[in-house]
Length: 305
Image 1: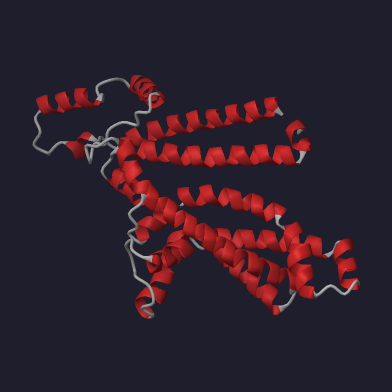
Image 2: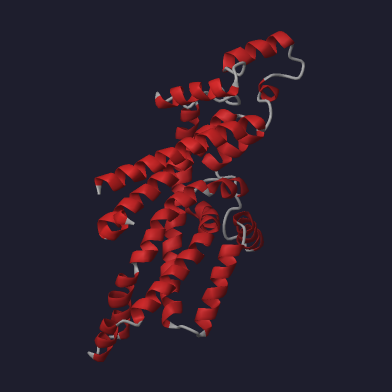
């Protein structure tokens, strides 16, 4: 088990290093950040001094070595646009992203699990077909399109929710649903599949023969035993929601990391872009490693595969 954990952690760190190299290179080929830092009438002397000040006068591989060295000391760099440490900007915006992601996770569970159980129990009925259509739409519609559609219907036409911004509970409904709709569809299909497997087992048939009520059979005997696979995916959704919040935060003007990184990209502030993407990578890889380790504890065969 110890060797398995070490191997998974090493693979995760290797993935982080690869991501950092790719993001570091792509951020710099997107354009010269000096155009965003200096005015158009800047002199050659000002340009040269600014390059030295921000370390842009060095070759790219040297810049990367310096970046990694600073990163290992907890220094994510300083923003070109806001002239603040990237860590301070992330600390300021992260709570809003976590709040929206957590609410989207709750909405995902509240919608996906009951619908998944219903369409499994009502297999091949109208409910089942409606659930399949709901899932197909959720997994094929782009997140930004879902956001714009629900905004137009429920905020503009029906005037039930605010169109944008961060405020009370009502401000979170539309962006959280838009962010979680794709995962609602996927989790619903997993729940349906797991429920169908459990509904066919002998102990469920025996419970029905004994006269146990159908509600108790479904929710106590079936649903609890069908939760293993969906809950595994449910754990991954947290990371997916955080990393997928970029577009939705922009659509709904939600003041989180997503909006921060979009503004940083427009301003060619690659220091902030690197920091946010690296944070997303750590979250995604870290959660994947924890789930893999949990699997290995639950099923020892996994560590030998």
